[in-house]
Image (cartoon, rainbow, N blue to C red; front, top):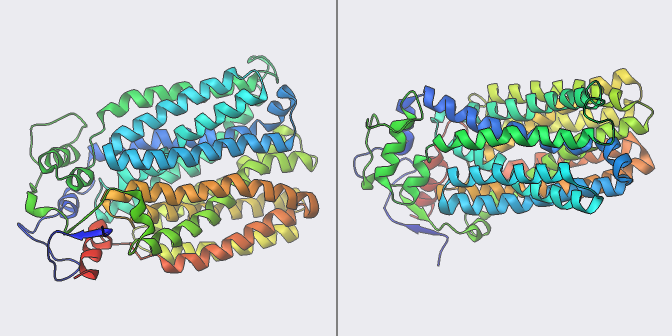
Length: 481
C-alpha cells in the first residue's frame, strides 16, 4: 500500500476539479472574523496554561527540593517525567486528532492536565510527584501542536502564519514572562499566607490547574475544522463549520458559507490516516528535517528555562533574585514571539529560522564568554531568549504547515515530540557541562545545537504565502502524476 493514493488527476500544483472551489479559497474569501477571534482565544488560553506549567517545577525548584528532601538529579528527573509524559501525550493526541477530530483531542488534553496538576499539589513524596508530573506532561503534550494545527486549518492563507505566531506571543512570549512574575509573587509575598515554603508550591499547582477547567467548559463551543471534515469526506459538515467560521459567534447557525463546497472539491490526493506515512516517501524528508530542527530548538529552550533559576541560585543569587532575573530575560521571549508573528506574513519560514538560528548561536557563544556579571547575564540572556522564541515560533508555524490534512496532527505532534525528547535528555547533559565548565558549558551546548538547526532547516519546503493544499495534497499529486 503506497503512502499517497491518487483520487483525481491534476495538471499542476494549483489545478482543481469540479466547481473549482477549495476550502482554502473559501477561507481566503472570509478573511478574519469575530468567530475566528473567539477560536483563537480559546486555543490561546490552553496554550498559556501549558507555558505556566512547563516553567513551574524549575521556578519552584528550591522549595520542592527542600520540602521533599531531594537533590538536583531528582529534580531534573521530575522535569524529565513531564517531558516524557509530553512525548506520550503528543503522539496520542496527534493520533486522536487525525482519527476523531481536533476538537475532541484538544478538550481531552486539558482535562488530563488538570487532573495531573491537582495530583501534583497532593503529592506526599517524591515518587508521587514524579508520577503526577508524567500525567501533567501527557495532558499538556498534545495541547500546543493540536491547538496550532487547529488554527492553521481555520484561517486564511494571508493570516495563517500571523495567527499561529500570535498564539506563541500570548503563550510562549507573554506566558514565559508572566509565569516567573506569578511564581515570584507566590513564592515571595504570598508564601506565608499560603502556608510557608513547605506548602506554597502545592497551592501553586492548584492555582495553575483549576482555571483550566473553565477553558475546557467553554471549548465545547469550538467547531471542528473544515479541512479535517473534508479529509473524512464529510462535505456537509465542513460547510456548516465554514458557516460558523464566517459568522460573528461560535453558536451553530442555519446560514450557509460564502461558497458551498461539493464532493468534487475534495483535495486531489487522499492520504491514509496512519502515522507510519510520516516515515515513508515523500513525507519522510519533511519529518526528518523539521524533527532535527525541533530537537535542537526545543531542547535548547527547555534546558535554559528549566535550569536558569537553579543556575543563578548556585551562583549566589537568592531565589527571589533568580526568579526576577529570569523574568527580565523572558522579556526577550515576548519580543521574539512578537517579531516572529509580524514577520510570518512577509518573510519565508526558512529565512527566519536560518537568520534567528545563526544569531542565537552567536549570542550563546557570547554568553559563554562574557556572562559573568549581572548586567551581562540579563542582556545576553534576554537576547538569547529573543532569538530562541523567533526560532521556535516560526518552527511551530512551519511544522503545522508541511503535512497533509489526514496526518497533519500526527506529523506536527511527532515532530514536536522529537523536540520533547530533547527536553528530557539535554538538561542532564547541560547539568554535567555546567559542573565542568559553568555557564560556558551550558551555552556552548546551546550554540552547537543552533548550528545544527540552521543546517536542518534547509531541507523543509517553504510554506509562506502558500495554501496548505498547495504545499501538501496538490504538490504530492503533481509529483506522482
